[in-house]
Amino acid sequence: MPSITRGDCRKCHRSFAKSQMTRHLKSCLGSSNQGDSMLILVELPRSPFWVYLTVPNTVKLMSIDAVLRDLWLDCCGHMSEFSSHDDLYVDEPDEPLFGRKRERSMNVSLKRAIGHGSLVYQYDFGSTTTLVLRVMGEKVIGLEPGIKVVARNDAPDIRCTECGGVATELLFDDWAPIAYCDECLGSVEEDGEAYTLPVVNSPRMGVCAYSGPSIEP
Image 1 (cartoon, rainbow, N blue to C red):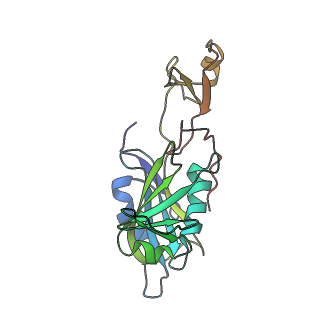
Image 2: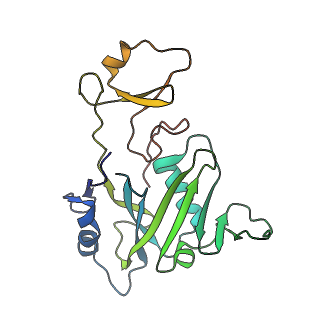
């Protein structure tokens, strides 16, 4: 799938390429000395999946974790963590073991954990999805109070392998996913080990049992 994608600004409803979106959002949203939110880009590197969030400075990592699960990831209630330099942020920290990063609680503000840089987020330590969170702006004016989506990638254009129409399902047979529309999938003979997952606008598409829905904050 191509990594160059477009998305709509949720304030002005204009479409921009990802490479243009940071500059546009900082201008469109505006900033002030009284602004209490950060502009955060969350993305799956080398993929078409990305989202920009406005996040108040006081929001805790546990709230970001919940948003990412609802928006993109949660299928089976897997464990997750944030990491930055020598620290891990988890639900229930353990005493550090030799050679391991220090474990800290997710009950800490995003602003404190991320500083002016970035965090790595991992969901599911079996079929892991690894996202990167980056600070793209500070003291921005959010659309509404709380965590809000201000831009998000358009759904990737995935086509049916048979007819070239818009694909709706991925058929997994011998571990190789094949995209089909509903009509063409109905004519495919599946063996006993084949299964399907829906085509969704998520970096978790085709992984584990993820099928959505996508719930935006």
